[in-house]
Amino acid sequence: MTSTTIDGAFVHPALFYRDEHEYVRRTAAFLTEGLAHGEPMAVAVPGPNLELIRTALGADAEGILFLDMTEAGRNPGRIIPRVLRGFADAHPGGRVRIIGEPIWAGRSETEYPACAQHEALINAAFEGRAVTILCPYDETALTPEVLADARATHPLVMDGDGRQETSDVYDWRAVVDRYNQP
Image 1 (tube, rainbow, N blue to C red):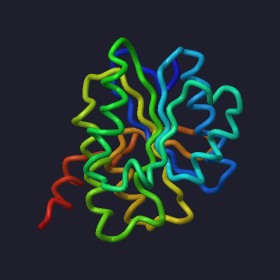
Image 2: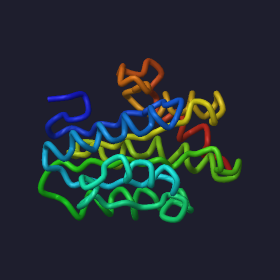
Image 3: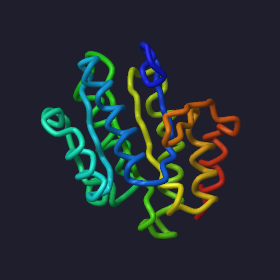
Image 4: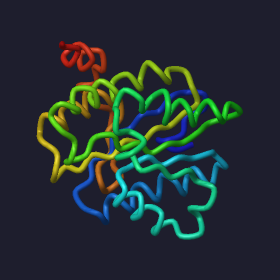
């Protein structure tokens, strides 16, 4: 058993990466682990990152659902029901594995609060489900506030070298409350 597969439990790590090499190495390793376990997998990340992952996997990319998050997640409020739950619910027989990158440097200030709430609410939406969702965050392009919110919305935090730790500031409900403003 690895840190991204826990039988019957929801696993939700944030991946903090600094460059393309770290991004590709960690996301490809996550998906390769899923292939070894025979898990259904989906990748929903912005288009350029989608191509990086697909290229790195080569023939292993066959059978993985790839979605451009700039289109599938244009409205952050639709990511959980249409992208994440849609995929997980279509595969009820065992653990599923998803990479979801709903927050990237191009997101607007208007979109961000809904994205932060999305990341927080994933924890309630998948509690008790056999689902692993890895959420990448670009440490060089995102603000310190965004990275702090990521630590609060993810119980596990992984760096680009693969070191993983429990987040000592995990409190997803506080993030929902903070951004639940008119």
